[in-house]
Image (tube, rainbow, N blue to C red):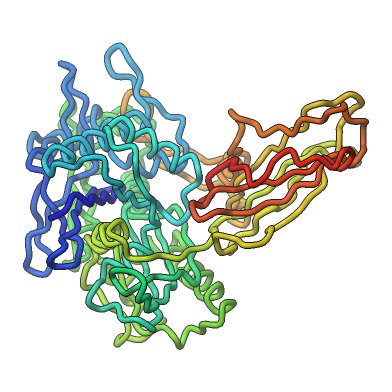
Length: 530
């Protein structure tokens, strides 16, 4: 194998792959310290549970080390790190004389994985591939940048997970065909429509072009939360009850086990004993009851919405739903029978494939870093925030609409920047990444979090918090300024700015001083887009 490394950091499990030049595919590999083997299509697949345990003696246990030592239910164990990083969770757990966030725990976990992989497979200064959710904001990419640098692997490329999955299905992917990728993992749900094109200039002869994609922060961890809520309802208990707090992590582990069991059995029992009182918390679930819980939380509606959003974007590019050859299912949560049933009802049984649910993403990421070409478009809207004197507050003007292909060969948009007051010499551009505001609920959704002691509890997500999560101020800590010389006058048109995107997905600005006609910036990179 070569040194081309790919890592798929998942909410539940993490996989590592290397590109095999002989086989011309990505091969998932084992990290002996952290991995365990599971069976997929009767073949062993090495996976790393995405968990880290902080022992009281200062040691850290990672992946399979946590499971083998029976530490998974411990309140000192971090799980679902990717999910909470994606949500920018402020929660910190107090352990001994320090507090640790999910960002900290995720970096410690993933850096350790990368370091061991680098040593195990003699990775030098080659680029590595890291996967990201469709809905990831730029701060998540910045976090990955810090992780890779801490591991001594600062050169990396990013590929979104469903697009990687398309490449990872390998033998089933033929040039000229259109595919739907449905990725339902531990923390997120994504859909992407892609077309595979011939490219005789590339070593692989193939390239992947994205036609439409959509995603949402819902995954297997959400299903565990819904089961947790149902157990509390059935037992007439609250997450703030002291005995529930003591066993909350064990209850979550049992909820996860029940969810997985119901993918293969018609019923499953849940039992957890309070070690202090000896009280037994028990509940039994049938598959139909589980499916009713999923329906009550609008899972099937969310699946349909995400699929339709991706299909509509592909249709706008000239590819109707009938053009899709196969629907490729990815992610552990796509093993749920009712999820597969919904997909077959929408697309027909003959088009739905479920051959590589767990490793397609990392295999595809390895193919991507090995040179299989990939053409994408911008997922989110990007906007400039400005003050509207008439409205008396901030407003946004879109400069890069979602769906914009890159690199661009002509300005995507232009705007005029006006001075706010007499004598102004520095006119700032505040650039925001905008999510889907339609997802801000009128009601108040509930989210499972861990309090500083490590106990699981349910928290209502306020409307303001939902809005905060739907946008991200990208250059807050490095504001882009245009310098006016001579100073500007209030309200005058001072700079004309054009926006472009380069091949590395960077936002470029070209700015001209309207008063002096001097070019003050030419294709200057300001932020990285997603």
